[in-house]
Image (cartoon, rainbow, N blue to C red; front, top):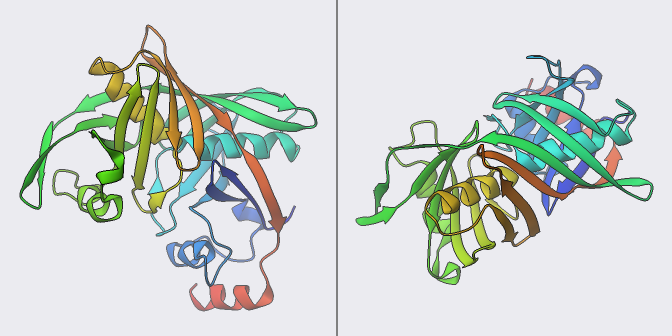
Length: 275
């Protein structure tokens, strides 16, 4: 196996690695360097093969590019599922993956000789406080959602008027969210359509996010703004989200492999200096 496989879900890219096969320890410093788009390979995070648990078939740890660890990632889980199937870790198209945010069941659909769309059962959303926060003196209505990882959804009338890069980090690190939070700015386009801009905890502005899509649809559906089946459009593309009568959320969308490769001697030297 190569040191890494690089894939993306609608432009949200991850490196998949097996820590047992790496010539360095996967420390926070190492993660930051590997994910650096100028001095490393470049990615929105790292998916590390982990032991299964809680009755799951496989396990994954999800790391943000700042070195912190995420509980769950919808795009990450779909990418990891494709990796497991196409790199011969399983011959099944239906299996479970353990994340820190819970066990996710995945179903793979083939497009010829490759895995195309992956559907992930993301569990139920839970909602919490607060329902408003104050940022720079302005009171903002929010929906606080958890899918095993934290989200703050802000519904807006005009996405084009939102300063995502300015407001996103302020909400991410707002004192109401001591563990920080993922931020979604959402505009309702129709009963079955949402458009998002995303500021991801530990990663910043992101072209697409699976759990963000699920959180935004869960919040919109709870507020009566959309139905249970919604297409979520982001700069990277569109994902499908559905909520059944029991509140279980399913996420549907593509995953694509970009490349596989080995870390060079030069990069390994810098990684060794950070060990």
